[in-house]
Length: 234
Image (cartoon, rainbow, N blue to C red; front, side):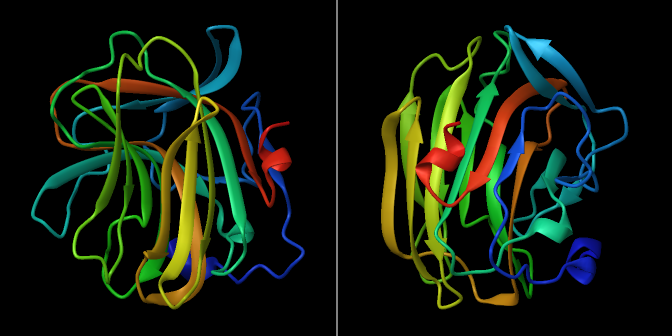
C-alpha cells in the first residue's frame, strides 16, 4: 500500500474542474513522490508555458511484475483530488517531445490512469511512445490481452493535444475514447481495469521507461480535468 493510498479519501461530488498551465508549482494538484528532486522545471518551450520533466538512468528504479527494470520521473494527482470509480471524466493535456527525443524500441509511458489494487497492475489506460510510434493502450483483468491503438508519424519537435473521455466502474466495465490533435485516436467500450482495493483512480504523467543509459526530457502544458469536453478545451 502506497503513502498516497494511506492519505487519500474518496472525493465527494461535486467534483472540481482542475486546470494547470504550468506557470508555477501547484502542490494542490500534483504529488512529487514519483520524481527525483531537480528533475522538473517550469519554462517556456516553443512559445508555450510548460513543465519540463527529465529522467536519468536509475531514477526511482524498480522491477515490475514481468521482471523488467523500470525507472520513472512522474508527477501524479495529489491524494486530495483523486476521483472515485463511476464518474464520466474528461482529461486534456498538451505534450511535446524534443526533436532529439530517442526513437528506440523501448517501452516509454508518458501518461497513464491507474487504480489501487492488491498487487501492482498495469495502468488501465496509457499513452506510450515506442520506436517512433504513439500507442494508446487499454488493459484489464478480464481482457485476454492489452488493446493497442497505434499512430505512426514524426511526433517530435512540436506540441500535440491529447483529449480523453472515460468512465470506469468498480465492476471493471466502462469506456474510453481518445482524440489526438482533434482527430479520433482510440475508442473502446466494455471490459477494462482491475478489481480495486480502494474506490480511487489517479492520473500521472512524465516518463516511465525500461532502463536505458541516455537521459530524456518531455514537456507538458495546458492540463485540464473536467466532466465535459468544454472543461478540457478552454
